Length: 606
Image (tube, rainbow, N blue to C red):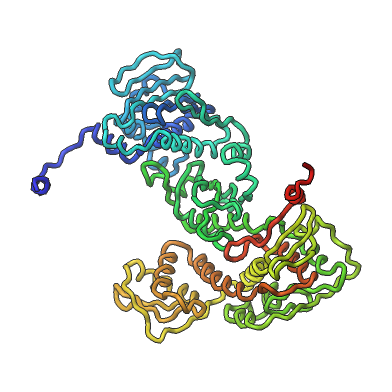
């Protein structure tokens, strides 16, 4: 009660003491020992260091020492280094709008010094010796060290005991500190990093190439189970590696994104990556990836968050689409590789008059789906047309004309090998150069049909189903504005949403293929995506969900007996189909068992 009365009394406005201001800033910048490590390593990199050593005591709670061999700080500038908003990185608004250094705010050291005991020792190349500054007393004394800087932080949060209570165990804080250095090591292979804890070397990364550093930091397994990512749009470049869907993890603990060398967490980029994995990832699994995005500094704002872990792009949709395209391109090529069309065509004509695995519509005389491989004169197939075509019964097989004097391909020309049998009406067995291939025929054919449908659809409009009684719901101001601005896009998706009042929206039609779901929930989710992401990507995602359902129903079913020719035709189609390693739901379509693994099953060679 007394606190309430005290709060209601008028209080005069006054300037806060400098130390309290720094402690408030420390609450934003310094969350835990890892935050201190990140800020100090940032400074070391900006100083041109080639070797950085991090020494920790008690997980960084008792002591953190960061040593580098950078340019050093002149003795007369040492006191300035500990002042708030004193920095060598920027001098004008123009510099701030095109920051290329890791640090620039000039508040990290002052914030750290307000909640810990800090000493700073540094020497420049032209100095006779180093100088050591005690942040608490301001005393400056000569010291012995080479060119570079050493910053020692002791008893973190000693002046704010309440903050110290929120720290975790020493092992947990150590893990966070090592992870902070690991993030820097990934993007700077030209710099050596070492982490010591209680006098023992915990982790070390020596100067090396970018590829070698990736293996050193994330391991050989990640590199072997990932694909190279590369996209150059001139003003924007995306590079790195994206993990295969099979190597997806239960947690999002191997997802690294860098913008101009700075580790960031960005929902827009994360959504772009997730969209690229959308129809190849099973359930709630998390992909592993390392992406390096290079963009002109004036096209990205890094002055968004005190920790500089968040950024804002001038053209966020451009970045979203670039990331999505780059990762999609990396995932498109299946493990077996995309076979050249000539090899795949030969594969269907060797040995006997061939037949191919029939989808729910026949091929034409050249062995391609009518209207799928080539757009017709009237344009691409619409969703409703495709649905009608896929409603019929599949013919048992169809024939293609064999080219004259076809030479038999070798096993290396056929990554998935030659079919040899079918098991339980579900799996196709094949032999290739590595050993045995097992294919889930329904999952594989489902992917083939799905990719052909996607290629044929283009941007056709989704058929709408009018609602007898419009569904209404209370909408936010942003939802109403989005419904008005994106009315044409909503019609393309089969949705007719119009405002009844400033706070109520009415849904008059829904996609015919999604008639069973909650139309209000569907409308809210689509409006939310349209408000944040590019309209074309939202349209494409909605179309693909419908095509996925159609492909599942159109694919060959289990327990259908196939001939060897039909099995081989399926294998050849897989070899020339993008993303053929997973079905539309993210389940694997095939597995390889090597001869060595077979030998191990029977203890051969023991």
